[in-house]
Amino acid sequence: MTKSISRNKNKTLFLCALLQGTSAGTENKKSIGIFDSGIGGLSVLKEIIKIIPEYDFIYLGDSARSPYGTRSFETVYHYTLECVQKLFSMNCDLVILACNTASAKALRNIQQLDLPKIAPGKRVLGVIRPTTELAGKHTKTKHIGVLGTSGTVASDSYKIELEHFYPGIKVFQQACPMWVPIVENNEVNSPATDFYVKKYLKELFSKSKKIDTIILGCTHYPLLLNKIRKYAPKNVKIISQGPIVALSLADYLQRHPEIEKKLGKGNNVAFFTTDSTESFDKLAKIFFGRKVSSKHLAL
Ligand code: DGL
Image (cartoon, rainbow, N blue to C red; front, side, top):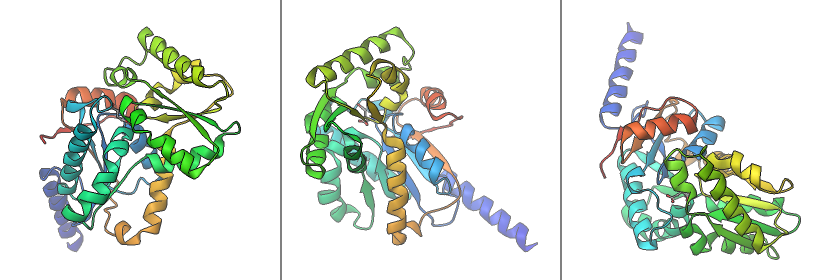
């Protein structure tokens, strides 16, 4: 009898959460927000779920305004802040910007200027710092290549961080503006992809023949990994961020029990997109590796 009341109560709570647009499985428990301009952040979420599947997650892809990579600093900052606030309103106290462009152009302002005013108890983390901390250890030649969106490259975020952590390392950057549209339009297996992967790798290696480590500095790029491997020199180490960010998040939660203890542990993942759910779900299934039923979110 008691069991059945509690089962019914849980069911009601779960339904309420769904109606409010979240999938948080436990009363008052928080979800971890994962944000990207589109579907690229799924390459990060996929790895996070491999090592800490027990938490509740809300993924938000701003596909209606993707790509971010070619937009101005102000626009990326404005869009990112809007999406972060939306995730806060959906019961996320911790948001990961699973987007390098947003991490490069908006994270610092959000952390230093916005959070103290709008949400002092909430946290927003990016993907660039954990990636650079690890990448410097891989290189023997001390020449690292960074592939990213035009915005990430123009921000010099990787260069600044890598040179700060590893003095003596030289960073060579290459913007790959066609790669995100290729991924977002599901053209990964088309001949045009081979053309653009070869083109940008050639441009990167024309800057230094000594590069032995490449950072995929955009969360969309792991979806092109097979092609990148095909055209990159065989001895080059290619670093994808998903596993690095996943480990760094697990470590962060261990170091911050005050945040961890508020998180729901119902193994729930809810997906939201600002654009068509049909195209999001179709692409997400291919790249995330399992069926996804997203909901549309108006900002
Ligand atoms: N996936 C994102 C990144 O890591 C953004 C790509 C875009 O919207 O241009 O930079």
